[in-house]
Length: 121
Length: 111
Image (cartoon, rainbow over all chains, first blue to last red; front, top):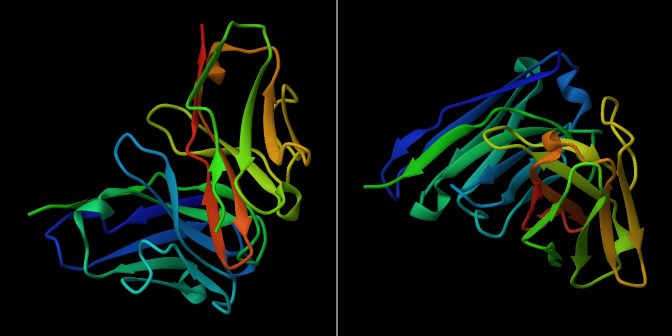
C-alpha cells in the first residue's frame, strides 16, 4: 500500500524554524517527484514546494521562497521541508504529496494525512 | 503566474448532474494539464481527474473532466450525484516556471 506519513509539525514562535519530514512507503520513492502543499484553517490548498526525482528541479511558491528549503533522501525514502523565519501566515496543515511521474510538472496522485504547523507567540 | 478561478459553491440534488468550472486568468488552458482533487470534510485531498480528463483507478465514471479553449476554462462534471460526493473540489494546473497553481476551491452541496 502506498503511504505517506508526515511528521515534525507543532507550535513554534514567529521567527523560529521547524523541519517537516515525510516518510514514504509502498512505492519506489526515487522514481517520483514529491511536493509539499499546505492548507490554512478553513482555507484552500496552496502549493508550497516541489522536487523532482533526483533533486535536479526544485520550485517554491513566492510566499515561501528564500525561507523554506525542500530536500529529499532517496536512500531513506524521505522528503523534508526546512522552514525558517516562520510567520503567523505559515500556520497551516502541511501535506506531503507524490507525483504521478518523476518530473516537477507531473500531477499529484497520493497525499499524506498532513502535519499541523502553528506559528504563534 | 496565472490564477485559476472557481465558483465558491454549487449545489444540486441527488441523481442530478453538476458542473464545476475553473477559469484560467492568462495563458491558454490547453498549455498545461488540469487536475481535479476532491476533499471531503476532515480528510486529505484525493485525485478524481488528472491530465484534463483521465480518471485514476477506483474513481467512478460519473466523474469526467474537459477543457474549453473558447472560454479558457476546465470543467469537472459529476453525474448521478450521490450524497457522498459532497466535498470541496479544487482544480490545479502547472505553471511552466516550476510552479503549481490551485484554484480557490468549490464547495459542492448535494441536497
